[in-house]
Length: 200
Image (tube, rainbow, N blue to C red; front, side, top):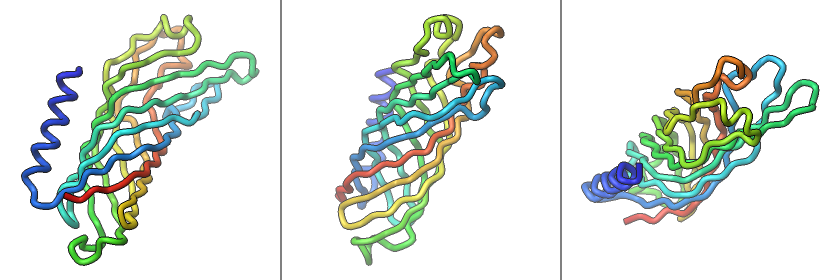
């Protein structure tokens, strides 16, 4: 997995070097993720997660917006009686491959801009667990998951903020049939990032 991540990062840098104008965008942020389908007899809720890393913006109005980040998501499962609470924690390296559009030409205005972006992302899991061992022992965690994200951003001088909504495309694990409450594990997430932009 490490070799694949390093190779992907190298491709991003090589691709950026092929363009006369590109930006490096280090950032940090928060996420709030939940499973797509709440199981019967259980209430799920998002706990605050985090991510940090960076993107490379390649191009002008139309642009390529790949990146690499490390982050963690936590979903809480509580039975309807309120007797049992279990946290699902997933952490890993995410490689988003977005395309975007800036509404203002950055060659004519570099102090303020508005953007939209969308695309797929893949996450390579480095930590996967449930807080209760009887659940954790019954699932077969997957090494990676796919998702798709749509979002919008604003650039102000050297700062930027991105807001996005991510839709899980694959489950994060398989599960024993006896644990039906944990069978649908595709994640949807609200993501907010903030950082600085360095134009080269």
